[in-house]
Image (spheres, rainbow, N blue to C red):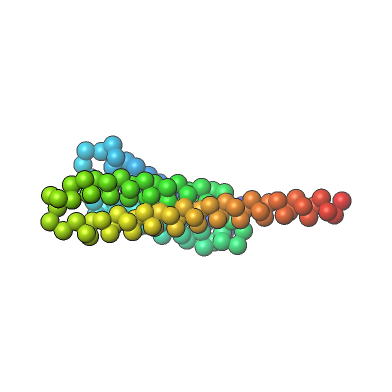
Length: 138
């Protein structure tokens, strides 16, 4: 295994672990430190974008799948939280900031989901072009 591939695997696994710890586990926990969860989410995004930069030319099924799942969760969670804020907007003094934050979360999720799908498609196209080249040579 090349050093670059090892780096991509380490970045992707670290990102997935941090994402699960920061975003999925708090759904089932009674308590949690919001600042800790926010920092873990930020580091998760930094790691997955670093892995994405390393594979941008060829694409990757693993990095694309992790990015797509992170993006889909951000869309889901932003939509869920936006519904909660809008439901209780009359009791919140200034709900505009919370509404904007949830909309930005959904927009970020769409971007991450699109980049993940792009990575998967790019890898599939590269694989199919390799098989076409091999079959043309025969």
